[in-house]
Length: 242
Image 1 (cartoon, rainbow, N blue to C red):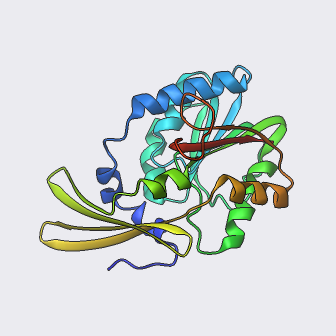
Image 2 (image 1 turned 180 degrees about the vertical axis):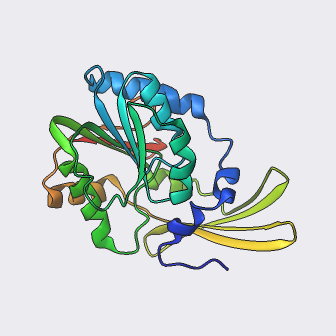
C-alpha cells in the first residue's frame, strides 16, 4: 500500500491519477474560467497565478484568453509535462502553496478542490496567508472548493470505474473531519492502493481561516456559472476574497 503522510505528493505524481480523472468536463472548466475572469474584470494582460495547476490545462486556457499566467504545483512530473507549453506569457514551476510565491498577481486561483489536503492544520492557514501575500493592491484570491455538506449528504459509498482498461475500485467515507476516498486497482498484474483525504471544510470553517489570516471575503458562489451558494443544494463552494 502506498502510504505517506503527504499522500498527495505521491498520488498526484502517478500517471494513474490522471487516468482516473481523464474524463473531467473541461468544457465546463473553460466556461468557468470565462465567467470568472469576466466577473473579476481582470485587466487586459493581467497576471494570474494558478496555484496547484496540475498538468497546466487551465493555466494554458487562461493564457489563451490573453492573461500572463504562472502555473505552480508540488508535482514535479506534472510541471515537467506542463513546461512543454510555456511561452513568453506562460510559465510553470514546482512550488509549495503553503509558501508565498514572492511575486504579486492580479488574481490567484486555487481551483477544483485543490485545498484541504494537509495533515498539518497550520498549513491550511499558511496557504490562505500565502495567497494574500501574492495579491497586488487590486488583486483577488479565488478558492474553488467542494460544498462539503452537499458531498457528504450525497456520498456514493462504493463504485467501480473502468478507465483505459483499468478497474478502479473506489470506496468513500467520512472520518475525523475528512472526506476519504480509498482507491484500489491492478495494472499489468501489479496491485495498487492509494487514499485521497480532503478536509471537509464548510463555509464557516473557511470564514474562520479568513478571519485568522486577516482576509476579507467578498463573494460566495455555488457553481461554475457563479450562481448563489446554497448549503444544501450547491455542488461547489467558490469564494472570492482580498
